[in-house]
Length: 179
Length: 277
Image (tube, rainbow over all chains, first blue to last red; front, side, top):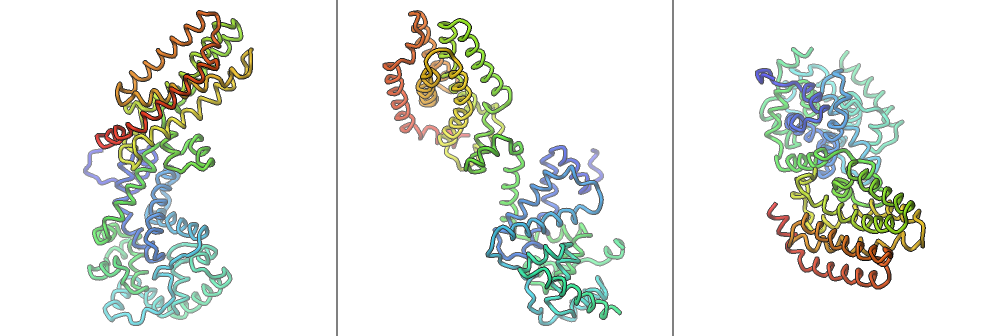
């Protein structure tokens, strides 16, 4: 390594497959904060978030050799993290849902935020803002978090059938919004 | 697609609100999508998150991955109800290493075989080796240089004495059944198969009690030498089993109790050892 070119996340994973703890440290430094923030939006219990974060990086350490470079490392890590959260919920009751899972309406989105959303996700953001909160939550878990309807049902504590219905309704609404 | 996303970045106030969990749901969802494809914004978010919990989680991760993967021994201990941390500390005892394991089993089996061939000398060899195998295991588990969990044990909240006792238990759990099996295969009365357990207990506790004063190696050597003398005297009198007869059992039991008493008193030494290291 000359050091001039920073190591990519995929490089770090292959170093981790060779049991390089320094690579794990670097990967943690790059990704722990956002994964932690994202988990915290789905689970209000800080200890649970820490546990899931820990499980995620231990799993990444043990499974680093299985990463074949398909897709991006952040998506791979998040896929581990959100599934760890789901499986934790399967095991124990008393889950404190985070704000992302609460289908209360976000009252008003400021004009500035509207602009921001338009700039980035153009119509999708705006459309997402206009669907009913309980539909938005389902969309977020399935489309953005990449969960199956079964897993989303566990996180939301509702029957799988309900998730499917809401997802269907959300799709129809989004199609109308984007048309 | 990536290039068009990268033209836009999460601005400071929005990122701050997101980090605090205060951003509205739709904004948060947008931020999260963007973070998946933008290393710059991920780096911007990092200093906004509380440092302490992340550091603690890192410590926990390091403690988990820094040791060898859970071995068969660890998993078995876990199933017996030993906590994960205790199991890790016990399983990392050098005595559980393959070389040690093989060596101890080979030595015991060899003595067993020898005793079947020529009775008095072979029996003496068995009575000599079987109690000393656990002592050697304890000595090995105290040698910090060769210990993969050395760092873990010095930074763990375990008192040094408790750690040592835990490991001793691990060593005994390993060496005792092997020697009992070999002993049971020996010709002669069945009680001989377990009679060496008292000298083993005396040897281990004595070794532990002497370690603060003489050091682990000297203690193990002293205990080994003392026991060798006992067995040699008995063997010389053409009656090696005398080394574990009833008076000896009682004597050795008393030695065990005395050593345990000393050990309890000297636990402060082990605590100091822990603080120094």
